[in-house]
Image (cartoon, rainbow, N blue to C red; front, side, top):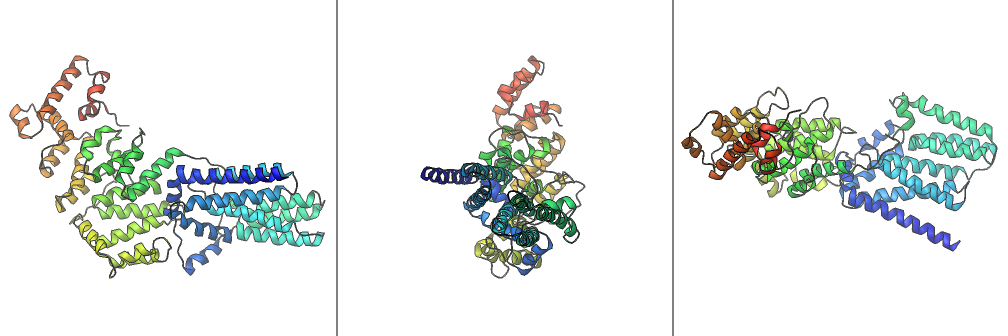
Amino acid sequence: MKNITIFTWGLILLCGLACFGFFQLAYSYHLLYREQTSLFTYTLLQLLSYIEKPAVLSCLSGDFLLQFFHYNGAGAAIITSLLLLLGGTGYWVFRVWVKPWIALVGGVIMIGWEGARLCSLTYPLSSTVSLIGGLFLFLLFKQLRGKRALLCGGMVGVVLSYVLFGYGVFVFLFFACLLVVAPMKQYLVAGLMLVAGIALPACLSNTYLLTLPQAYQYPATEWWSKPDLMHERLLGMNIELHAANWEKVIQLAQPDMRMSLTSVCSNLAHAMQGDLSGRLMNQYQPAGLGLFIPIDESSTYFSTQLANEVWFHLGDMTMAEHAAMLSMIFSPQHKGARMVQRLAEINLINGDEVAAKKYLKTLSRTLAYKQWAKDRMPGEQTSEVKQWLNWKRTFLPEKDTLRVSSLDVAKSLRLLLEANAENRMARDYLLCFHLLMKDLPAFTKDYQQFYHEKPSRLYAEALLIQLMKKQATGEEVKKTGMSPEVVIDFNEYNRLHNQFGGHPDALSGQFGKTYWFYYHYAQFQ
């Protein structure tokens, strides 16, 4: 018995360490992102909103715990505690019928299954609480004795488990029916409980405004999931962008991931470091999608958040606000602390203090963002916030225009540059967008209007292509101010291109990261 106890506690400790280590070290961005796309406010209105759906207790407690994911290590600790509580409760439920070691295996399986489901961004923490609640109510139910007590307790348990724990009713119902049938032989009690458990969600679906499938599985969203480490990296880039950790963004984007989302993140990070043109050709670029994510009917809250980051840092608050609003609409519960923060910042920059106060007052009723909101409240702003707002306002365009599409970006960028010629990021985004779209005439026109420095290597390479098309003289090339080395390399590129009939393999080794190679061989899909 002593050896079994040591083994049990050792296995529990091992499971706990494994859960905490995984979510803290390998899946921490997942937890932070879930917190950023939620918003728990200490208001009566939010508390009353929980009675509009089943699973009142599990949804309230799940959302309450989710706000602590904002703090480093807290999310992993909370998930680990819930999983261990689920496994422990499951162990004592299984012990009613099986030997301790079999019950222990069952508890571990429950921990693994629920831990995998928690790897999904859309799987709510409240669903885990629902399972624990259903199992706990069964442990109370099994203390009853006598047919009448079992029947009354079962009916009350069905109602309580559904109202408090949603689909946890079926966990309670399964084990309760199993108990009264084997070994108690109370078939009538089991039948009545089963009918009540199946009928109750159907009867209350209209009251709760749920479809029948939703009524039977609420608050769960899926029955199986698994870790997605590539998605975790994308989440990491998104979160680090919001935190302005540019080097970390670049580090996460380093392994070759041919995805437009990766390109958007790394390009923005390079631009914020003032080196967009110097690093543009060093990685995969899906044409204009490497700089701007289109916002359309296929957008998600993830892609709209990235679009918001790009436009916000460029200085176009109209497009930034549009993306932030859509991100909230597309989020799982149509709210999110991160986007409320951004909407507050946008309205402060625009000088709309009434709208900004609306968002700041909401954040002031939270745990994690109370101080952040206080520091930015009009009339109470810190000197750092005032200085930052004054700086951001210098980027605002003096006039606006209708956007035909979300990729009609050149017009928007020109307006930003007309308002502030020192907006180097908008200038580089405009020129690089033309280059990625292979629109050299537009690039040359905007280059001559907005660029007044010695051309970077990328811009010089693009200018040489256009100058060659116009059969420019050596004197005209010299007037651009480009380095003679670029001209020498261009002549060598053309020599190899002619010698090997334009075969890309002959050029990729030496010139694979030049704009000349991109211009000739990149295919739009």
